[in-house]
Length: 461
Image 1 (cartoon, rainbow, N blue to C red):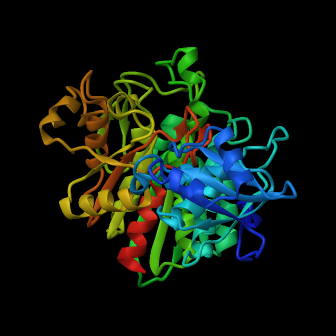
Image 2: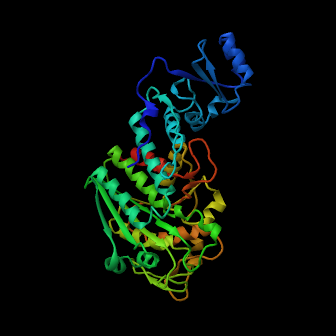
Image 3: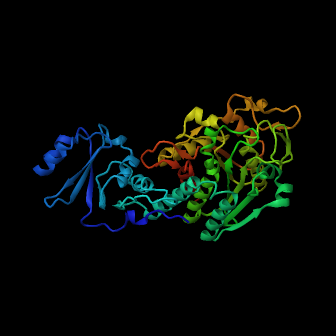
């Protein structure tokens, strides 16, 4: 499995590590007074005023790096730890150490690694070489396992479908199972067609056959936690074909699967005392003579008949069959993650995925952990009043709900296939960073998994 550059976060508290001093705009003049004249003049010549996210590397008398001063703006309490961590991509090679940092050092260390990520499978990329001495009190092993999982998630999403189709996604799950001594089985062919008819219907037109990946790990008597991830490795839209511009990023339509694999990696690496199960319906929504059609009525694993109102709403079909299987075990916590709707992006943009949960207490916990982890999520409602939007004249339910509240109706559709789980959470993620931000390079992104790990660790550790 991918591993983050562990040498970038060292336990070696190097005596010669250059300190990173955080200075606000109101402290700047007073701080300058304590500097040698040469460094003070150099900092002023660079125009350093303590402005947020600005920095200056100060030399010693030999021209080597003596220290770094980083601007916190007017309010150090609002310092973004990921922006400070993004120095990993900006500083020259060397060893650095935080000095009197007002931001959460765990998040600064994590941001140091997350910002250093580069996707280099297909071409050479210059890798950052700035090393951070692990701040005192920070659990380095925990930071590394989270960073490793984010790297895994990003790598899977960034890989094009030519190298990350259903078969390759299965291989990634098998590698993860091998690394953590988990059990894995994969359902394909006639058994898939019989037991998971909607997964089969969506994926049958592809040259890479559809499959259901089923990974399990952990304590037999542990609390049952089940993760379901949408694994549509490419989505043409099917016969309701997407325009070419909308297809450009459809390699990321398996980001739900990538994220649950990333979360599973953290949970298993941390050894949380749970009984973990991961279900991934892995398909490619392609077009051929045997593609499923608008107007088809599909039988689901649960027994509900589903009218296909649009073949481009395929993700909820494959998730529904996987959720039905997951629900049979009556897990304490059932979570699905999916790049499900454009409507969620219209409502909240690419950086703030919505989540749906009927349990107010659990929803409040998720929101609190999202704030602590700086892994933003926003609760939207399973609005019962919109259930009728999914009505069908010829089947139990339609897979689309008309022109309004697309993310809500997609969630309501999925909820119909869950009934026995003690708690159910649906997350409509984007899985992509369109414009680079601190800790988030352009490309595939892990969304929500740091929040969920924080939640699971508090609940079950």
